[in-house]
Length: 620
Image 1 (spheres, one colour):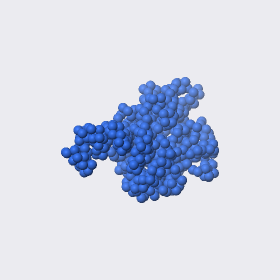
Image 2 (cartoon, one colour):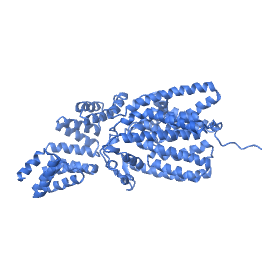
Image 3 (spheres, one colour):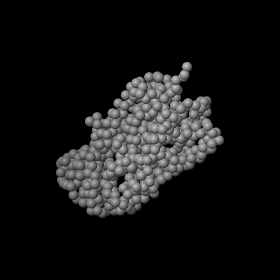
Image 4 (cartoon, one colour):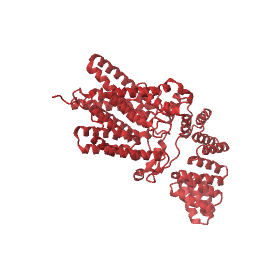
C-alpha cells in the first residue's frame, strides 16, 4: 500500500539528532555571555533627548508611578501600556537611566534565548542553525537601537511576548493541548499591549502552519485564528486613531508633555510611494550583511536621488525575492518561510506602503529589523547546515566564514553601543553619517544648550538654519540661545516663528510669554500662558506661577493670588512663588497670609531680599 505524502516540510525532514540537555544549556549560556559582553557598555549610559523626556524624564505618570492611569495612557501618539508600566517600574530616586537600560538588556538576553529555542523547534533539533540564528540576532549592530535606547523598551518587550507566543503555538501544533493555544493568545495580547507591531502575529502563525505542513484551508486552523485576527483588528483601529491625535472614543487618555523633536512629513509623489518603501525593503536586507553607516536617523532622500541604482532597482529586488519565495513554495519551503517572515514583519513600517502604520522621522530605522531579521537569518542558517550535511568540507569552511562574520558584527556592535551613550554622542554620529541633516544639529544644539555650552549650541542651530531647516524645534533653540545671550528682542522674534511653525507646541507659547514678561508685556504674556496651559497642563506648576506673576504686574491681585495658589498646589511653591503670593495677599489686606508666605520664602532661600524687606516693613 502506498504511504501518504509526509506533511513535514522537505527542508526539515532530515533532522540532526537533538543534542543532550547539558550541552544545549551550555550553548545557551555561551550565547547569553557573548551577547551581554556586546551590550555591557550600555549599562553606564544616560538618557538621550530623543523621546526619552516624553517617555520618562518629563512624563508625570511614569515619574509618579501612576500605574492605574498608565493602563489607558496615550504617550507620543502610541498606546502601549505594558511598555509604560515597565518604564515606571524602572524609575528610581535620583532618576537614572541605568535601571531602564539594564532591564532592556536583560529582555534582549531573554529574547536571544527564545530565538534559540524557537529555531531549535523549527529546525527539528539542528542546534547549529539555532545557535547561528540566535547569535546573530543577539549581537547584530542593527539591534543596538532597540536595546540601548530607553524609549525603545517597547521593541524588546513586545518581541519577548511575541516569541513566547510563537513557541506556545508550535507546542500546540505538536501536542494539540488547548491550553497551549490559550497561552499563545494571552502572550499575543500582551505583545500588542507592548507595541502595536505585534498585530502581524496571526500572519506569522499561518507561516508556522505552512512550515509544519498543515493545510492552509483546514477548517480548524482557520477557526483558531479568528480570536487572533479580532485582536489585531482592534489594535489596528486603536493605532490609527491615536496616531491621528485621538483618544479612541474617549476610552484612552492623551498624556501631554513637552514637545519632542519636530517630525514633519515631506510631500511624496506616486513614484516615491513605490520607490521609497521598496528601497527600505532592500536596505534592511543589505544592512544585514553590510551594516555600515548606522545611525539614529536616516533622512528621506531628495527627489533627484531617486534615479540612483538603490532606488531604481529596489522594486525589481522586491519582485525577485517574491518570485524566489513562490518558486520555493513546494520545494524546501525554507526560503518561502524565511522570506515570508521577513516580509510580514517588516511590511507595517515600510514608509508610504498602503498598509503602513504612520510613523515619523526617517525612511528606515535600525529598530525595525529587530524581529524581522529572524526570518532572513533562518534562511541563512538552514542553507549553511544543508551545505554542511551534503558536503562536509565546504560546510565547515562556510561555518568558519560565518564565525568570522559574527566576530566582526560583535566588534561593530560594541562600537555602535557607544553612540547611544548620551545625546552629544548620538547626534554627533548622525551628523558624521549625514553632515547636512539639520534636525541632527538642532538636537545636538539643544543638548549642548542644556549643558551650558551656549556658543556651541548656537553654532549648531545656525548651521541647521543655513541648511534650510525651518522647524519649531530650531526656532525654540535659537530663541533660548538669544535669551541666554541677553538679546530678548531677537529671542521674541524666534519664539514668534516657533509658534507660527507649530501652533500646537505649548512650550513655544510659554517661552514667548517668559520673554514678554521680561520685556514688560504682561497682557500679551497672559494669552500665551492660557494657550500653554491648554496644551501642556502637566506643567501647570510652572505655568500658573508665570500667569500669577503676569497678573501681579497688571495689578490684578485677586486673580494673581488664585493662580499662585494653583502653582503651590501643583508643587511649584519655590521661594519666588511664595514671595509673589505674599505680595498679592498683602495688597488684598491678608496680612497674616502675607507674613506666612514671606517667612516661607525666607525658609526656602534665606537670601531672599524682597521677603526680608517686606517683613521689616511689617515690623517683623
